[in-house]
Image 1: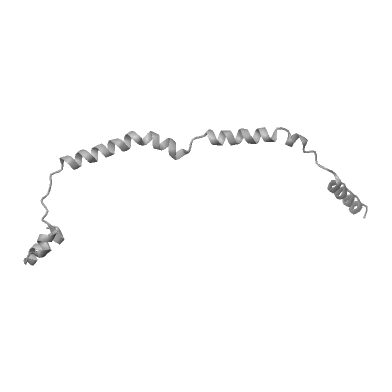
Image 2 (image 1 turned 180 degrees about the vertical axis):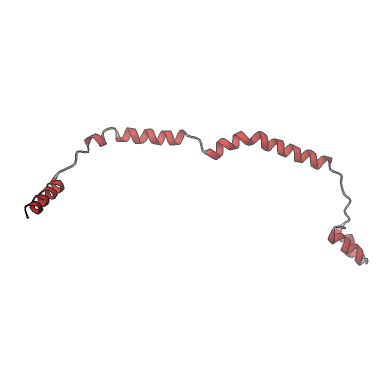
Length: 98
């Protein structure tokens, strides 16, 4: 029983003692503000990549524009003219793309 009594007294002493938090409290606001400032100054990852990829996106847009301009224009019949025509073969050819 002597060991149990000693253990009980040690637990009681641990519950009654106040931990020294003065060292942790020192400079807390300064550390917190420094961390917040560092997080705010760091750019977002997607924003950094967006600015780096602008030349590639511009090249893709220019290439698509040139391709659209240089592509031969296919003559497609007017849909209303096809629908009002009496030829069923024209309608089938128009809707199937033949």
